[in-house]
Amino acid sequence: MDYDLPAEIRVEAEGPVRVVRLARPDQLNAINEELHLGLTQLFPQLSADPDARVAVITGEGRAFSAGGDFEFLDRMANDRELRRRVIAEGRELVLNMLRCRLPVVAAVNGAAVGLGCSIIALSDVVYLAESAYLSDPHVTVGLVAADGGPLSWPLHTSLLLAKEYAFTGDRISAARAAEIGLANHVVPDDEVMTAALATAHKIAALPRQAVEATKRVLNLHAERAVLATIDFAMAAETESFDTAEFRQNINRFLARSPVTGR
Image (cartoon, rainbow, N blue to C red):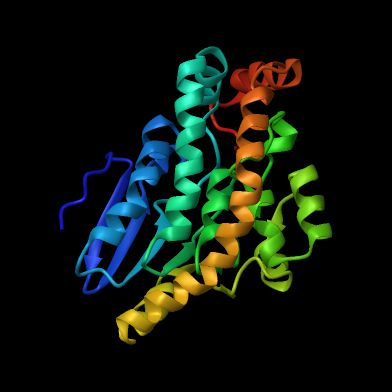
């Protein structure tokens, strides 16, 4: 099956496994408009691929995803129509991941920040490289984490820990993430793809209907929890783009770097 996606996402076939690569390595796979749209479009296309059984998602280069692109966020702050569209895409992306028929194995090769961190939280099995870390710094930038950790972290870890890491945006080391239930396994950096692919092929060899229906049973719990909160979260994030604190942070960060942690 040919995938219709932006160049920022590459999909390769390895038998019944689809290897998905976030492909902005020079920008540490920061989320720009094209990558955001591509992630939204990706999961329905994976579900529609008749020969696909499991997906492995990873980042090219040194990071899984370093978060949002400040220039993109600046445009969203100044263009309400773009903001409306991207926020709507974010809602669709979350639900598309939850409803994807393929089990998704995350091979987290480096920093997973902001939306990158959310992709990990919505995956089905998570392998973290030892040097990798998770972080959701929406709040520290001045944004509500509408598609971020607060949506799904409480399903994986305690509500108290979800609150702490959502409020502070602190980095969660690979070892700590596994300890508190945000990852399945921590492996040496050079083994993360090998380990993720081994699990993907193991799942792909199991009875297809049983795997896919079991994933759906499990994700119904997550989907119901997400649907209870996501519309308020999206409305609140839309509003936070207009706050003085966010504008000040954007101006400061743009002067320093085009990449943030959204």
